[in-house]
Structures are given as C-alpha cells and as structure tokens.
Length: 239
Image (cartoon, rainbow, N blue to C red; front, side, top):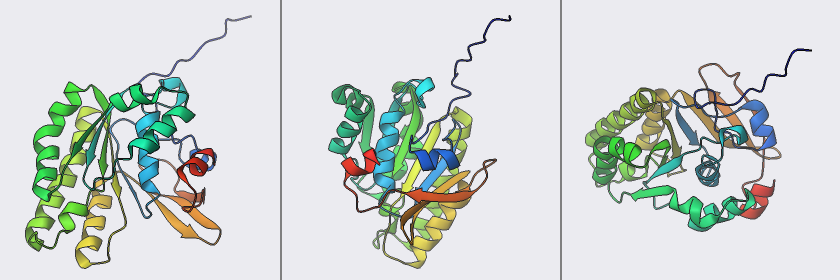
C-alpha cells in the first residue's frame, strides 16, 4: 500500500473565506493579489470585520496567518464587533485587535495620502497580507471637494490599489457603503468596480438578502441566500 500524502496549504494556494456555508459554496474565498469590492448594503461592514479576524487564522482554517492594515475612510471600524467575532473563533480578542492596524482618514486628501504615500510602508512594517479600505468613496463624495478633482483622484486611487494588490501579492478589499444617490456616487461605483478583479454585493431579495458574486477572473458568477440585514451581530455570525 502506498503511503498517504498529506497536502498542506501554502500562502500561494490559500484563500480567505467567509466561513458562511451558502457563500462559501458559491465563492470559496479571496486570493492574494486580488483587488476586491464589497458593496450594496451596510452588511458589508460586518463582513469586513469578519475578514479582519479570519485573516489571522492558519491557512488550513481558511485564514492567511497575517496582520491586517485597516484604512478607515468613514470612521467605521467596529472594535466590539471584532472582539465578539474573535471570541466566536476561540481567539483572544485583545491579541486579535493588536494585529489590526487602523489608520483613519477624515478628508479625501488624508485618504489619498494614506493609500498613495503610506500604504506600501505600512504593509511592509506590519507584515500584512490583507488591506481593508473601509467606506472607500465616502470622503470623495464631499460636496466641498470639486467634482473634477474628486473624479480624477478617485480614479487614480483605485488604479493604484489594483496594481498594488497584484504587485505586492497582497489582498486588498474595499467596502463601498450605501450613500445618497448622485451622479458622483454612480460614477465612483462604476470606477471602483471596473478596476477591481473581484466584485461582490449584498442585495435585497424576496426572502431577505442575497450575496451576489458579480465579477471574478475564473469563478462562476451567481447568487445565494444570505442572513438578514436586520440580525444583530451575534445572530448574524451564528447564522
């Protein structure tokens, strides 16, 4: 009898998964080098908190064994949600939070500087394979920012993130939270989804919410049932 081969996951083979049954069946997870967009519903925010925790897990458990750089464009980082998710994964909440390096931007100029001027150094300094850009468009939707400047800079920012992810073999995930409907908002969403190579959304359905895989280099696109947006964080995670 020939010996049984034990196959171990390696960084190049690994994927960062949500560990949510329906979603994982449709979408096994993000790979290093992806520039991904999550949009459509405020549910994408707890999803990003979930990924911040799961990224710290071993490769064999659907993680990346990595620290996380969290660039916060909407003051959206949820410390208590992250702590609770860590407990559900049987991890020490304080140790998990210490491995998430949060940088907050309060203006579009600060966000641009954090990404274009400081992100490269931050990823190296904190040895991170996951970058979350939270509420990526919010600051560029400021009416005080000239329309032409906002469009040009946002376009430059998203092109940079796409190239940055591929060049550094880092997973970059941006959340695009709901904002008032405007031509600028529609334009920004089209830009960022066009430059990303993975696009997924959470949308309303007849029976609650659905997760939709809209763009991927090789996975089959589709949709699947998703826990209701009205669930608490506890119910959401347990679902």
